[in-house]
Image (cartoon, rainbow, N blue to C red):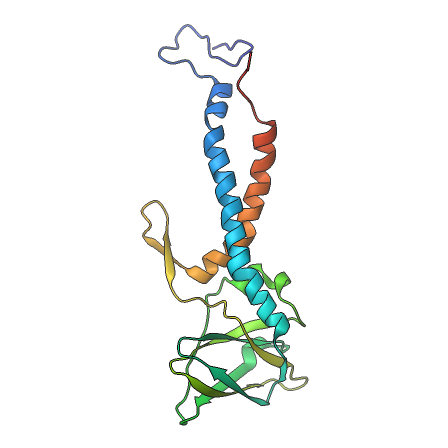
Amino acid sequence: MSFDVEGVDRSPGVTGKQYDRRAVAIERRPMLWVMFGGSILGAALIWALWVLPIAASIGNATPIPLGAAEDVQVRAGDQLGIWTSAPVPELVQCAASQANGEEVSFSHGPTTGWDTTLWWVTPGDGFTQRFKIDAQTEGTISLRCWSGAAGPGGDYLIAGDTFIDGTIGLGRAGNNDYPLSAVLAIGAVLLPFLALVLLPVLIFGPRRNRG
């Protein structure tokens, strides 16, 4: 097997279309541009519509000492994130009730999410989201969070929710469901990185001759 200076296989036994690695790389450039543009667009949407608003809500929220109660005015359908800066977040517990005395339920998020990939975006003193509240009716919710750990208690605050409900189907057939909040958290970091990797390939990759 032998190749000429252009990288084309000139071996006598080769039949059919000759393989030109440079030509294949050139033909793939439109697909790479689509991937690059999609990465930039996807990252911009995730950061503008999800990451930055949540980070701003955390920065604007007032920390509440663990053990103290707080009344929160909510509307039906509101989704609130309960964030804590306790030394051991896993030991923080919360309870909430509506004005009529009915208890409000809490929910948890996926194991991979905001605190795994975007912790460095969170303002404040090491706050992590511990719970989520789905407000079913409009009114006032009385909320109290406390820590079961001895020693310094820490604070909690009420801010944006990263534990988004729903899943998204990925994979070749789209039959593998992943939590939407996990996909957004990973995409916020992975998409800019992918665009950064593709950029030098597109700039310095092979081009067609314009002779």
